[in-house]
Amino acid sequence: MKRIVALLLVLFLPVTALAADYCECPDAATHAERQKNFDRVLYAYQTMGASIALVKDGRIIDTFQYGRANRQDNIPVDSETHFRIASVTKMVSAVGVLQMVEQGIMELDRDIGEYFWYPIRNPYYPDTPITLRQIMSHTATLKDDYHYEKATHGTIELLQHVLNGNYTRMNYYPREPGSYESYSNFGGGMLGVFMEQLTGLQVDEYMSHNVFEPLGISAGYHTPCLPYDTKIARVYNVETTGMTLDPMSMDDCHYDTDPDRTYVHTAGALLISAEGLAKIIIALAGDGSVDGVRLLAPETVAQMRTRQDNIGSVTCDSGRGLNLNIISNSLVRGRTLYGHQGKAYGMICAAYFDPTDQTGVVLLTNGCDTSTVDTIARIARAVISEAYTYFK
Image (cartoon, rainbow, N blue to C red; front, side, top):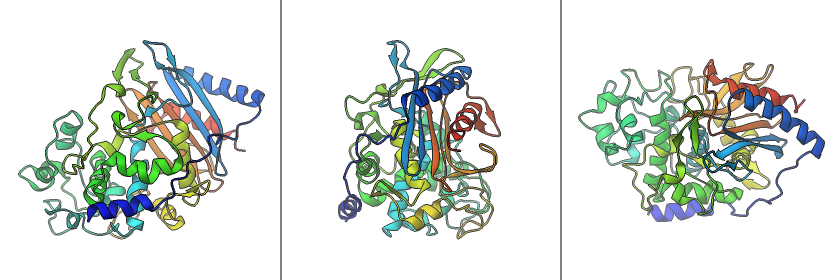
């Protein structure tokens, strides 16, 4: 039965790849001036390597590359370089899960324990269901600082023991699900669990068939699942000048579904290029489609961008969309931007957009000054501010 569902999902979207000449880039002089301005910003924030993409009106209008993807071998960043994007992964993973909602495989306000062979409840509030809407708005009361943290360091306990075992209390806040907002990587990782549990497909397989391949892009949560010749940026902590992560050395791609152990990857492990990520924010800034390829229905995209404040099973002001941050008058004066930031291993990534004129910016780095103001990285603020001067 799972394989039948999986095949239906694969067939849900057309697989026609987008044209290779997707960028509607400006004249050489305009591009060179913009490149110089971005170089100045990236240099000021001690960036090792970076890739930037600008979007407007459903198209990529310019791209920029900077620095090195691999310092030891002096390999420069180019337009095909894939970066690990940390928590921006959650926004992309949400697209795949919301496709399942559209197909009726999941429901936003249904008890997620009904999708498993064991109950999933906050032990402090055993009568209150935990729902997908709560997970995607960070109100499910899941904590990161015990089993999830151990899993990110390689010690993965079975999910049924984590959420329904002797140590369950360590993984929840003593607050009623839906009534309390607290950012949760664990919740982001649960998106991959749902994919594998309910479709019978491994996370990379599901997302490739339903999101990446239809857009004509390569992306993956495990490096062995990417094409063998994919260019991948190493990650550096520029404060210590040391490499902190070499994604090419990660060989944990599994080809069988294992939902009891897949509660980490969809929170922060995705590797993708700036242009690939730009195509996804084009869909989210618009009606859910990119150049004729539909990822989500218009009403689903609208719901994703809606603040989940006292909606359905959320009984508080979450201040967030469905795995989307919503930032008003802070990144760009007079604009409300939607998207996500990633910060890990000494790097910053960010992807934000404005649906009102379908503009957006993707910034991927593999090492930079990671200082923040009100949780948003200074480098992201500077790049986005510069980019939006070109949209006036």
